Image (cartoon, rainbow, N blue to C red; front, side, top):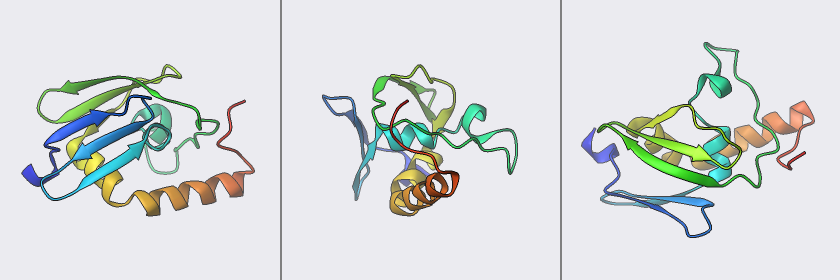
Length: 119
């Protein structure tokens, strides 16, 4: 578990990228990516098959960050979304499998005829 806890967390100056520094690797996660994969019930639903496809989030930024205890990060987004705690395991999964998660998301958008563009 300890290897899944970032040694350092940095937010880019433009607030569009969260940098997670681990002992052996650094990952950069876009605000949009983190937003569409929020662990909140608003995004994931309350069970399998209840997920809500997030659209129009291309321009979202990170408005705030705070650590919750020793187990998670709370991210506040510029669109007002602030529910859902990104525990260390979930953040590590998002970092490690970013390309696969993003490809799946883009496929879902395509199938739904939806867009990353706002409005």
